Length: 117
Image (cartoon, rainbow, N blue to C red; front, side, top):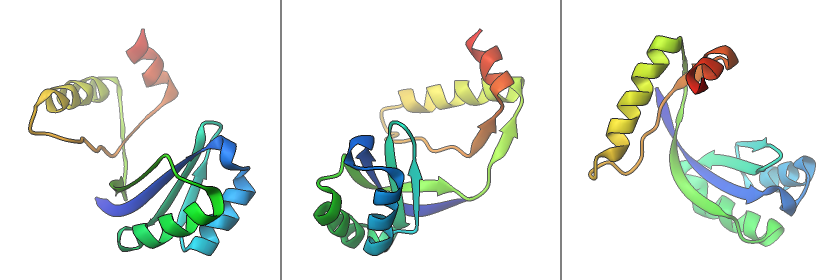
């Protein structure tokens, strides 16, 4: 259900999507997700240090470089399922023994609008 990946984040100000993509490919990264807020570069968990070091030489210091769990499959939730999941995540995050919660859900724009109403 989840794969362990290395995740390196950069602000959008380091360069455009093509610049970051080329630097990531040369560094040995597997994927790049670019948005207006910034760039997320994914690599194999065992390659995090090497990819991060190579990117630092090319793009400068990253905002974060960490190991994460990325979902391999996702489940779409309706309004009721999303409400239940949000309550569960809230309870888990309130527990002092839990450091991070990772989920593999998708939610439609309509359901998100209903949740925020």
